[in-house]
Image (cartoon, rainbow, N blue to C red; front, side):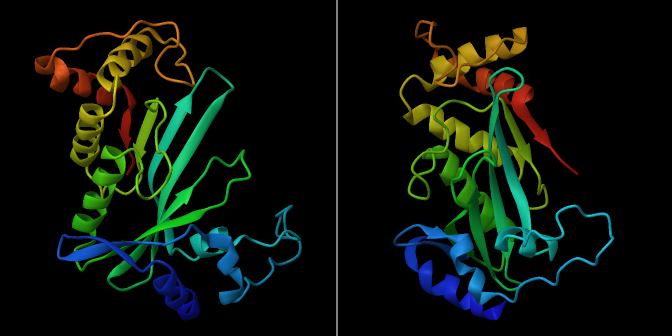
Length: 236
């Protein structure tokens, strides 16, 4: 596994920001995680007759390292557009066992998009560096890590590692995102109304047929809290 970590450190080497007693680095060009599979010994094939119907299918690099306990899902976003249509995105962490972690952008399994390595997070204080990274990721709609994170507001946000990420960090990121993105508060108000009524959310915003709404700045905190009460869940 050391060869993989050494190669990742070479590929994710552009200094982005110094925070939380450490720093965040990004790749100069997109890094597809599966292209690094030859740096890791392949997993032993499953024993015959163990009930696994996929014995002959080799594990992906992501699945292999996840099974070894070194990759975990940090944050899960879902856009439910009415059953059975939904789209999801995961942010996972590869833990190297020292001060470094790598953030992985895991696309919807129904697409052919690759898993991307989007950042190296390095600090002895893992929680502080993760929260700084996630707040910026949300606030800037994914930039510079991915082309776009949202497009429209998620209908479900799930924190899978509450030991590393607090709901308050999600709230802070969304507050910054909505304050810089055109029509974001209007979209949030419409999304909240529709979610409270159990209506379908459009794939291209909170509602293509809805007019832009004016939300007073004094109402922003309460609106954000209503939205989070509807969509945010913490596992564990």
